[in-house]
Length: 440
Ligand code: EPU
Image 1 (cartoon, rainbow, N blue to C red):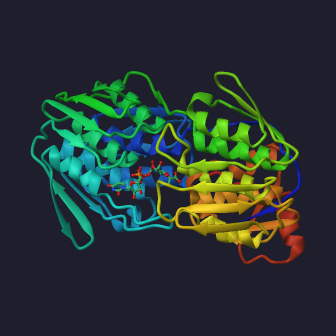
Image 2 (cartoon, rainbow, N blue to C red; image 1 turned 60 degrees about the horizontal axis):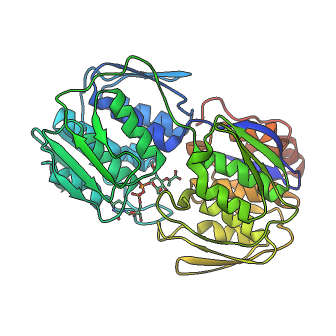
Image 3 (cartoon, rainbow, N blue to C red; image 1 turned 90 degrees about the vertical axis):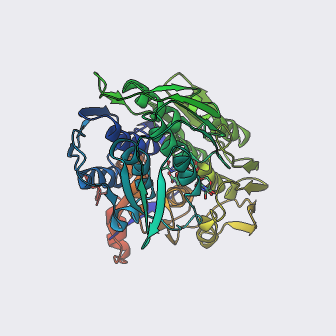
């Protein structure tokens, strides 16, 4: 296994391209199951999670080809199981439930279990699919669903769950009659999935609002043109926070400022100078960030997936900041690692109080989940000396070419075997060791 080594203290400058959004690409790749035939998708990020999804598609009998245009052949569905070894690596595997039940009448998915950020049940997914006529049993850690022809229904979600909304939406597009999802998630990735489904012939109204109305159709077919995945707003935001904490000047291209309103507003509060065009965002970091208050919320509120990165900004701010996490019950794992770098953070319940320090110190730290890992890399970029971020398989799941992109902005960063400790070897990695072309 490898770790990331970062030498901090170099302001980032330049331009970096946003990749396609992981959390839109995964459901869209899976949604191709709904329309038999050959699909073409562009702007699909080359990530470990993308490869896991394509491998899962292979397991149900749908071959694919990765490349600038991803091709998937969903003519035949031969199997209907998402086994534990795939779901364990990627919770989004649970998204096969809706499409498999709608097209194939049967689906068996290993229950994902908890993860580093919380318990994360899927009761809302199952409740919605049951309302459409599916029946579920729990068998040895697997949820086994069967369905005849699904029927449209009114579904009231207890919370606006992102993948829950996506699973129910994918099932409803092929149901008989009309479905309404109340309290639906409004995240841009849900909207992108909805647009993709529309490109297959689905009839959906209300995308981007909390009420989705779906008129079921008898069949869907692959679109004529390749579908382009929307830009990754969380990756975009991560590069902007890297500019914020290093006093840098970074422009992210091929992105969409509309997707990041809450994040940009918060960065402005911290003293960043933000300028936008319809497809670019430039962030000039302040000499020292100002303290702020932040609370995560479902879209269009501040995204939980940017909470850890903003906590790094708070650790360096002039004053005391508070961050309240309302989406996941256990998403402050990065705080303990930031303490090792000299941050002052006290977490009580779902609120963290952060007393900003003039600087952080490089140190070895352990990544606990994808966004925590990204935050630790951002902290390393600002810290004095060398930071080593262990367990980077999380980063490979969600950030395309992270080392290459950050080097393009002038960062001193590299990958090295995680048992390397010789300072000369660690420093050597700062100039060599690019990203693997295909993540492990
Ligand atoms: N929840 C339930 N029951 C359910 C579904 C959700 O109690 O049936 C709870 C969750 O436990 C959580 C809250 O509802 O407390 C919201 O979770 P949600 O279902 O919206 O999260 P998700 O769909 O599992 C997606 C993203 C996450 C992102 C969240 C919130 C994908 C593949 N994952 O997860 O992304 O944090 O929405 O925006 O889209 C990441 O990319 O690092 C990541 C974790």
